[in-house]
Amino acid sequence: MKAPAIVLAAVIAGPALALQPGACAFVIEDPAPGERPGPDGLSSWYRKETARPEDLGGGWVAQGNRIASESGTQVNTVVTHCPSGVNVLVVEQALTPSGALRMNAGLRAVPVFREALAASEAVTLDAIQRRLEAGGANVGRNIDPVDFEACACAAFYPDQRGAKTPWATWGQR
Image (tube, rainbow, N blue to C red; front, side, top):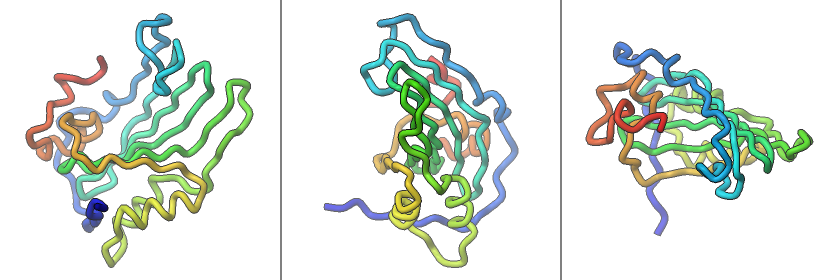
């Protein structure tokens, strides 16, 4: 059975910040080999650089990251709907360990989501995913609500945490 599509709402102004967005931009330095596997589950080291998040409006946030490991480099944007915990991972670029381009999407997630949020008619996540994939991006979705708050949500929409574990409790482990 296919999960129902979430329809994006119109853009609304967000509340005052509870956490400065810059607090969400951090670097996880190369852990010691064997301390923690890389995001691919195979690498013995990795470096993750997380960019300052953006408020897309209507409870939606985006945050870019760059992950480098011995298996290559990947540039991603994670777009999260703060009230529901639904998030979309958009892989926008991938490089081999030598720096050769594996994949480079022609479309980027933030402009596509901003356009959808500003549209006069409802746009589904399925439609956004199809558009990004047609532009060369690799899109993964987590439609099961997560039980933890994203740092970007703590910064822009702290009042929409619900029952999720607060960022301040679990973040940057």
